[in-house]
Length: 357
Image 1 (spheres, rainbow, N blue to C red):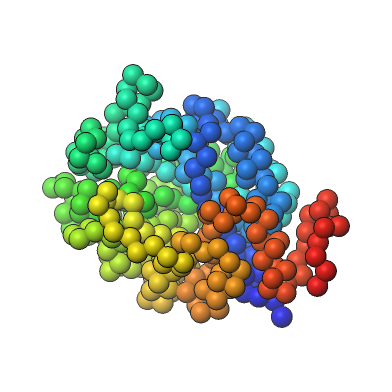
Image 2: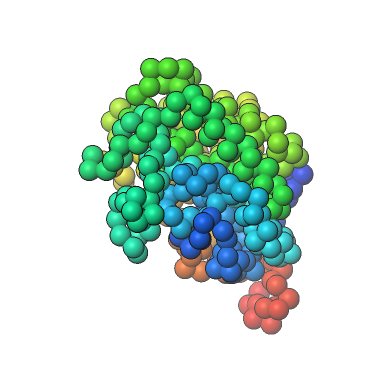
């Protein structure tokens, strides 16, 4: 009998061959937003390793939306060619290619970890950031510019244009990044959104830009292909975005025909207190799945095959979205299948190394 982890999942007109998803993980290796051979090998090796879905890292919908100057981008047509080479390779391995569309807001213009900390100065290639309100992430950082209506409209159109390019680049799943303290999350949370217009104050106002982005993307993204969203279920900080609001949002997203909710947490407040441990975010996925009937993805220190299988068997998620473990071991899915007793197809080039069952 096949495990849940290696049971296919139908999403609209595509089928994931298993429930293992490569989480978007920034590589800080692009120049002017362009993908290169590092991204081809990084993402391609995880397709060879047997994941069902690979979601490319947070890819900026505008230059000012990059987390760092070295982030991937999809704000101009010239970015498409290399991304298409990558999606062609992923698809050839029987894996579905996805991309996370993102705008970092006030958390943009930062150094990659190995180059420094905090904001990149303007004279070193940094830029002025924008946000829901003029509230910095760290009190020592420069405050972002508060987006006016024209700025909000540009963000919405940037996401839609990025989705159009993603389709041309061969991606079959897009994920809208509304978690980890980036721009959409900055609108959702009262800790970062101090606006008094139609985008601030009430829950309905704070989710407005998110809903408008989804509606704009749906106009250009085929109905037969899935749209995912990643949300933070809580800010882990008093007075912030919380699990009750996240569950309420999840129901609205489901009503908007969002295909799956990738449930993470945190990232908005520098003073957050996160009780990190194995599967620590899974209860948020479980609650949203139970209370809204949404399909969900579980994330957060999921590192073992049995752990992933148990989450699925317990009905706590529909997909297992893994990050660091798949950096350590691109072939985790091949090894996990053996551990769970599943006889799956290996790449023919590697078949002679397949363990006997």
